[in-house]
Length: 555
Image 1 (tube, rainbow, N blue to C red):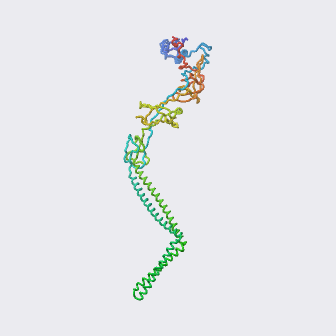
Image 2 (cartoon, rainbow, N blue to C red):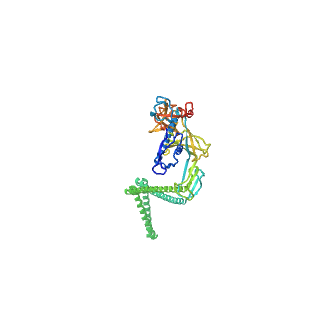
Image 3 (cartoon, rainbow, N blue to C red):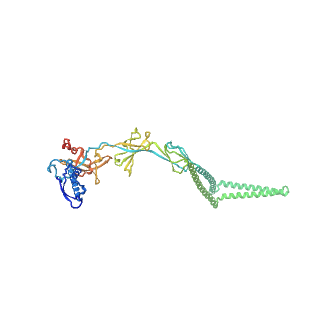
């Protein structure tokens, strides 16, 4: 290239439009010369006049030529750098560089890192995070209402079952107990009175029953004989009285006795006649038998007596129920008084006091939290993907950074049946009796579990997976002969997700198959690849087969 250029520049020593034509030579610029040196030479070739004396259109044209020259230099340098660093190909039918002509070549191979599939899955050990929780945490509650007069424990105290932990004001309960006692005694007194009245009614009923029975049976022969004898005795007494009256009358006529004795004898004979008539009437009644009206009257007495007995028995039953109710009220009052002493229902250590002295509490209000550290529960967070691999009874080794000498070999007791919707995990529970000292609720720990071995599928790094169109894929490497290697797309089944590693399976997979470990997300089926690290990796870019680099060859 010969950049020498002749150009006429107007010159006017007086500054007017008429200037003389003086040719100015622009020196040659080579690739090694910078823009600053060119400007310097150009400035020396100019007449000893300020460049500002040139017209504006002449200066702008020169600037455009300078920038065009710089652009050509940059393009040439970039093309040479690409030729030096670009891929080298063997000679072939496509030309000196080999392969197809440059205008029909495909995309350059993508660099990838590969690995080999190994048959089977060895026994895997996983680690789960967990936390210690109290096995039996108890909230002791008040069973009565009142003001707390005394608190007998504080946080950290160890208590036993039955210990009194607090006492409530019991004035109201004592008054209620005294009232219940008075009402109970009154109910018992009423019951005793009703029972005595029932005894009297039953006696009257028994007499009425006896009378009715006698009436129904009639008079017996012995009774009739007795009454006939009574009649004969009455007649004899009457006859004797008559004889005595006759004797006294005779004496009275003779003036031997007083008139008073005659009156008394007459009165005595009248009484004897009355006794005879009564005895005869009784004899007639005995001989005639009971009358119908007498039977009806006596039967009515019996019926009334039976009704009275039933009514009184009902009253007694009601009174007995009243007494029982009052006894229940009494027992409740006694229990309420006893409940003013809040008693520990389980042994343990006081974890937190929930009330203070002087607080008013109601029934079922919380008093304190009690924990039993003789039994602790360990909850392990189990990823949802591992749920099918872990079962109750599976051995586990527990350890904690807070207790370096802790390792405990135990087993999982149970699994929660439902996974958490937020963490997508389940809880595995381990219960430890008599845990080692220092293993307190809230302690964080880890659990190491060894899963059983399996021969189904292949365990690989998660990096080999590619997710596309809802399907999991891996890319296998197929040798390309004279050309670059090709990526073969293989759909796979994700058997298990173990976090950093996964278990995959597919009929197209086989042991020692070379698959893409890194770089698979940008690949497509049968895309050209260049293995930069892995079993089939070639020499580093820019090196020859004997290890010499391109820069060494150039030297």
